[in-house]
Amino acid sequence: MAAKQVRNTSVKRGDIKDTVRLAVWARAAGCCVMCSTTLLGSRSYLHSVLVGELAHNVGATATEGSPRGLAEDIADREAEENLLLLCHACHRLIDNEDHAPYFTTERLRELKKKHEDRVRVAATSGGMRRTAALRVGGLVRGVTALASQRQTADALLADGYLGLVDSRWQGDFLCKIAGDPNRPTYWRAAQEEIDATLGLVEQSVASGEVEHLSIFAIAPIPLLVYLGSRLDDKTDTRLYQKHRDGDQGWRWDATAPIHDFSTSATIGSTAATEVVLAASLTAEVQKANLPDALQGLPYFEIRPEADRFGPSLFSHPNTLRNFADRWRTLLAEVEKTCPGATRWHLVAAAPLTPAIEMGRAFMRGAQPPTEVYERQNGTYTPVIQVNT
Image (cartoon, rainbow, N blue to C red):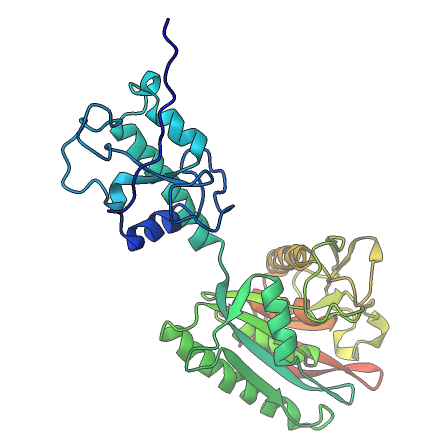
């Protein structure tokens, strides 16, 4: 049996336009469309070289010696649609006479399309997603606190988000709450400031400029609950938690432990018209410190399993997700257990993000108005009403 000749697969590329070469390489993401080997190992990639070769589907010439050259009669054999990016081994494979019955022009088109479709899906789904940052800050324990633009950018980039810096809204909504929480006018003014800022957010969402919102908020717990209650649940939203440890900043820690939560209830009478909701997260809410009017009411509480109270409890985003699920379940239990309740009272010792999630969970119209309490002078005082 005569030894088979090894055919030289190199083809003169003088008739292939540079724009076509670039398009073929780009659509294939610099990889062989058959075996996905990366082909960017040579600087001379615009030519048929060992690391990457432009192969013809229908042969380069309409001759017997050109693989698949007589399979179809096409007008432009150097068109992008007729070229495949292959490694040297795969190029030799498809042009081998023994494999001609398998590597038909139709099969090669299918291989090229499948590879380019995978590239397109990966490129569109794996890129950075645009988001708009909402920063809320004000006086907390006598100190003005607000996430900086650098801190928000750092947290967003870590999660694969890109701020809407090119929109007319600049992708950065700032809600700076002025005043002293000890003054009676503070709470109403703060709510109005939050409403005004969220009004701008709603305009940008309605215009189509914003489809995703990232929230960085530092404020007293009642205002965070109010903020959550005012958020549009139709807009994709991600909350960010300020961390006290090291240089973590506002970035979630994917290596942190994931915690879960348990709920409990102390019910004197299911016919009660008012109930207490307690969130013991950073510390345990002391029932003895509740106002006299709340003493003896049905008491529903959520707390971390194994009583892992503390500010670092919410370091992993899945901990927040677990809390949100358990909190909504607790609210449903309150509705079922005390269906005649016309007013709820919320007392919380909580970090930033779960306070916002508490507000997001309330269903306006379906659940009673809720008084939110602030700890002042050793007791709890109602300062804000949500879900009205």
